[in-house]
Image (cartoon, rainbow, N blue to C red; front, top):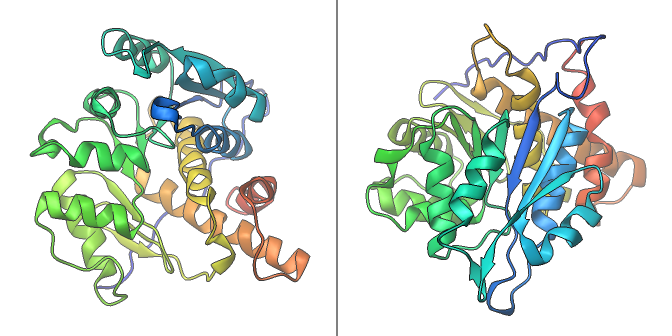
Length: 301
């Protein structure tokens, strides 16, 4: 399978633009159920979306941990998901999600979210609406795979970002046999899943693969420093940040090319850190985010 040639160019920034010009990313994630606290992942995705050039980021997190999430990314605003007992409110959380997406231009769902009943409903609700592009990551992928024939209700313009383990979960549910770890079959595996689901698939790992079912592209940059927690949350935020600022009236969405740019810039930012520090390991997501603006700038020239 030969690589497609994505459009690796971003539109120039409008010199008269303001924060509303460059879109709003809603990040739905985090959990505090059952004594398990996950709040860093959505904050990292929000920071990455802003570093990628989005005008606004909105954290949509369980009410008890939302203040801590906003403290980790103070440039973001917040909307609290109501809780009931130890989990999200089945009655009220879906309506809050709808409000959070009402004026968003892109959404990330899944970082640190959990896979409970309400979380499954939120993931499906985001992916079932047809208007706001969705980047589904982490727990959102595991949550939707728990439902039989989940692909029948996917209507959102979507980018799915599985690592090989999450890919296997989706592949079992969709009867895809190709290995997500064998370099010889990874491109076909990503393409098959993209065709089956009607979305863009970003199969993470060494030589990340991006496919929309017709076009398939492989990132050739080696960036082993990315093998640490939180870098996948950063990638999800970068993809959503690019979608949000490039979603303009009269311009067709090319989620495939934007995902390719995000993957390439993500790897370039990691390699820049390696060059600066002369270190092979120790990269943390915050350092990665700091290098994203320069890594993305070359796609604007």
